[in-house]
Length: 90
Image 1 (cartoon, rainbow, N blue to C red):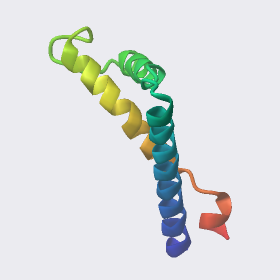
Image 2 (cartoon, rainbow, N blue to C red):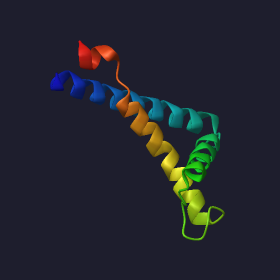
Image 3 (spheres, rainbow, N blue to C red):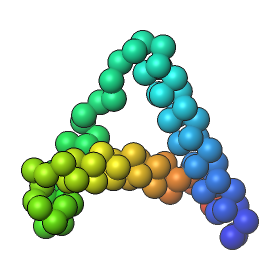
Image 4 (tube, rainbow, N blue to C red):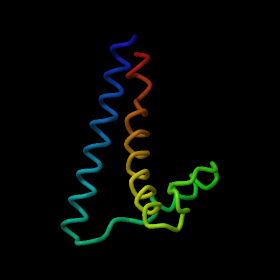
């Protein structure tokens, strides 16, 4: 049972990386900036959880960097954790 689970995690990670590469290539080709939505969602979730992203408060420059960095990390984590049921049960 452990081996299929590891294969599922690996497949989720590879899929997430492929999606990231396609997204960044699209940004390069179309010369468009990154979306601010992931950073806004990460900031809202951190605020609701009572987590301060910077020592100087959420309005500081380092808070913006922390929010911007936490958004892609959370996407990668969720992509890595989501595997089809057959990967771990089949």
